[in-house]
Length: 181
Image 1 (cartoon, one colour):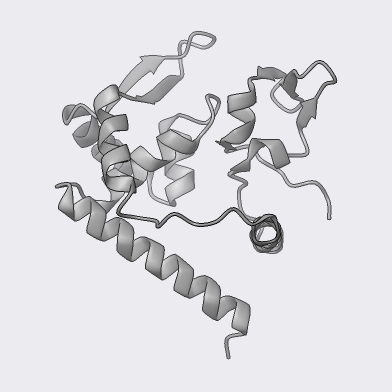
Image 2 (cartoon, rainbow, N blue to C red; image 1 turned 90 degrees about the horizontal axis):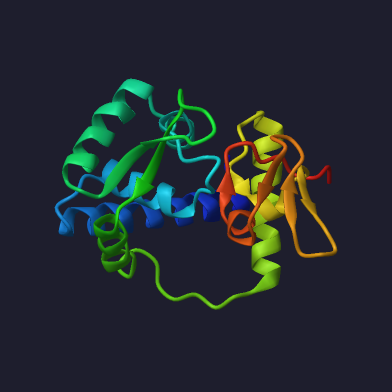
């Protein structure tokens, strides 16, 4: 028998997926294409790879590769070699991709009030779900145990030994690990 948390969580997830499917269809996209655009809009610069996308969406690398080809052909994304490691290819939204996502995002989620208690509750649910199920991170960088904030306003990822911008800390990262609760 389901508990109340599971019921409401499933309902929220189902409603969100339904709205995404409807918005994608109205824009002439498949759901996975919209999910790719959305992911690239919320991931930080260290998590914009095909492998991270595959992990995030829970799909095979081959399936994601085919979807990326279609989204790239439509002009919504571009691939660029990583400046620090030429073996890595980074994925970026094009201006057309950003415009498309902005246009259809308004049809996905209504304007919701910012409520710190709700945010903390959702983060707690995510923490418990991920840790109890041994699932990969993908949390907001600023809540990661590896994020180091300095008095001068600078940020650094202790795991990857990379400097982080304030924008990076607002986005999600594939390496995210919650602080121990």
